[in-house]
Image (cartoon, rainbow, N blue to C red; front, side, top):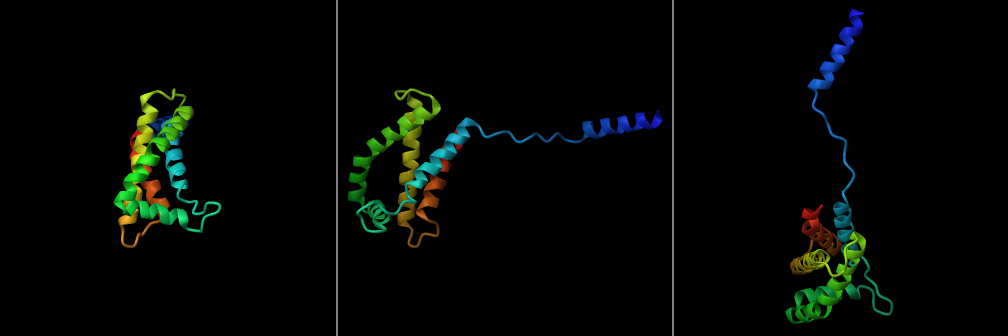
Length: 148
């Protein structure tokens, strides 16, 4: 009987004196959305070929647009509204928000801004140490980190 009491008090002591290590929680919906956005935008730069165009054309075009100020401005005017609108629509569908709400539109603008900053950063390096895909993935992840 004494031994049983000693074991019980020993177990009680172990469980009350050791710090509780919480079980890892599953990723939040916001974290999953942030990861999906980073991967989706970075994935745009993984494809280097478009049917009917020479290999490497897309990469070279993006680099040219990023480094030539006049082209950069025109590209932004032509693409920004359409890309942000499509991205905001996709974000709204995924989150269950309506397309007219502010949050999907702001998030789309943040992601698009991170992508533009990443492309400019990558293009301005004399000899980039990372691929454009990695830089875009990192920039978008940085931009949406606070939402997760």
